Image (tube, rainbow, N blue to C red; front, side):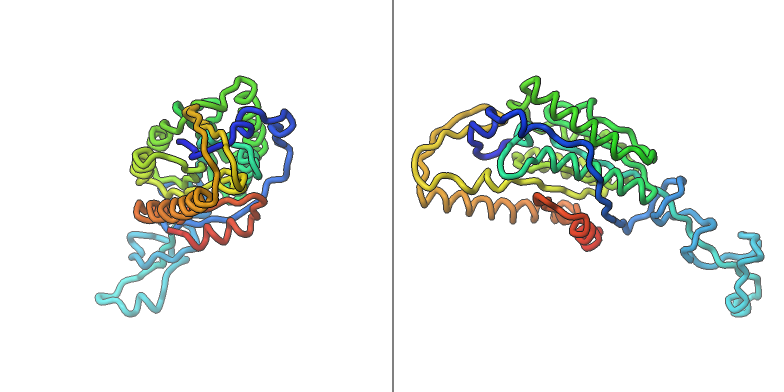
Length: 316
């Protein structure tokens, strides 16, 4: 995954104070929904195909097949030919697995107007809080060129998962900076990480800036076809805007380390702006074609209400 152009100072000369993330914050709760049925037997809020003591009407069955006299329906019974006693049947509701898949490649360390690492920490922790409050199991995976076991969380119903996840992600960012791991890493292991979730359908939030080659994006979309994937796009406006109006600029690719000199001028500024707009339009179209939900473009200062509205409106 390669960000098109990054000022060198932003990538390698960050002050220690700018890299400190606050793990102790109050997670926000947002809401999501699915129109597919869970196959789990753990009690939750998602509709299943299991008949039981739920409140969602499923149809009628004979009293002999479902011997529950409390649910006999007189009107339905008198309409049967030949006559038989019918009972109402209901579907149970169960939990689903909710995953956050985090891209931790080098471009996610870009430091500009927004701190994407802080956004990731807050969003994933709020997702864990929201999932557990809704009765679902929350799990987390992360990858760059390899899957990062330090950020792996198995699906859990524990109520303290959000706070533990916030501390875990914060610790990872700080250790990565200390070990100078912010350069030279791409997101090639994301497809493999998605496939490792198994065949049981899950709700997957895929967090990245999605500055990916077409081949990697295609592999990732194919790997996520068995799941309900919600792309969460994090972009920093200063990566493509706010550059000096004129003069020479030394730019460096954070993932390959390649440096180039550019002569900034009005025409180049317009080309960069047009490319950013076209890339956003193309990315939305690729996700739509692949069958994922509409991507959530996570802006700095995002609000839980806005996330809930987007997730409800884009329910696939």
